[in-house]
Length: 134
Image (cartoon, rainbow, N blue to C red; front, side):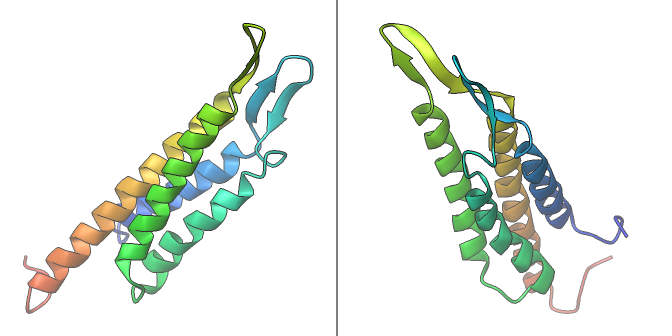
């Protein structure tokens, strides 16, 4: 089954699985409170941005531009969130990003790579008039 899948589709599915597992890891370390996971910080909302590239890779009839736009917006949102979560009070760091947030950012970058690979293979397949050249 994995041999029949395109590399872009495989990267999209792996990135979604890694992102989903990163929600269980600590996303933010708060000094007096401890670690807070991705579900407590509503990280599942970004998972909705992962849904469109998955649907595009499954159904193959959706516009690929929206897949690129949603995957890039997931990266931008997570990087912005990692910058906003860092708080300092009187020169001391009160909260800062933890490992789960960095894993989520890495998964969203892999999602962008998978969508771009998927889009490139779709363009080259449309240029071949009689199927794949062997």
